[in-house]
Image 1 (cartoon, rainbow, N blue to C red):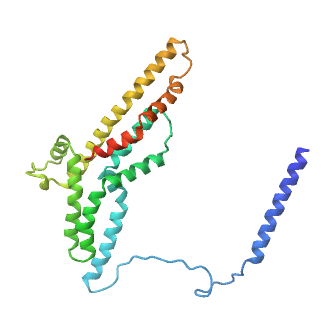
Image 2 (image 1 turned 90 degrees about the vertical axis):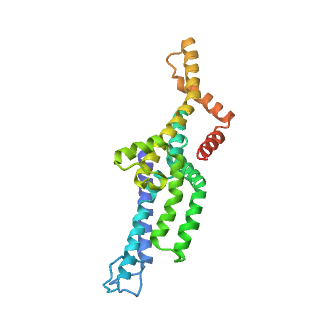
Image 3 (image 1 turned 45 degrees about the vertical axis):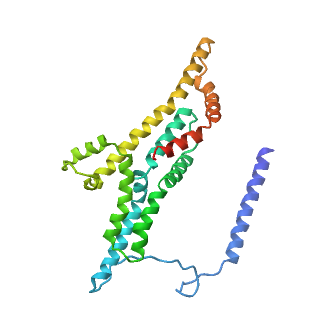
Length: 265
């Protein structure tokens, strides 16, 4: 009985698929030899070439486009390494592990929240860059070098505010550069790795503070289970609801997000 019913469903499925294919072939237009400009779907094309010209300005324009595409390809690394994104995403990852919720919230939520918090924190810096560098350059009031210097200054100021002197001295000694007299003499390639390890250290410190209350709760639950003789029951199964209850009662998201934003003040 079941085999007969299965055969009927398979036959019906094959017939339906065949009718659909025949209908699509019947309504399809005959293609024949394709003649450009007569029919069919035309797709836009983009080409980048070096024109043959005697004017140096033409080559400079093409090189600027190539440089812009290169900067856009490095935009994710710039966003991650030179902004507040690193600290935020590491702290949120520590929070998820401390709660023991496995993949809740998912990675997409953590990265998205870290991204928008970074945009919120870096908004004054982006506004300053837009006002002092991008808008004058687009209006052709300044050249490319001046725009780069003006755009670099706010980013360096933000990184200097979050970088420890000990980390900066480490990379200055590794680079074998002369001791700078002020911040303006510190090279950017020295400042960036100093800022990154400072951010990682700060994020690990915050993560340790996040772990403490949940670790104490795990220890209490494990001790109670051992006292009751329930050694075969994993303490994580019992402590997880209490962790979530504690996190909700103290309004954990407001505390963590507020503390993260204020830590960049």
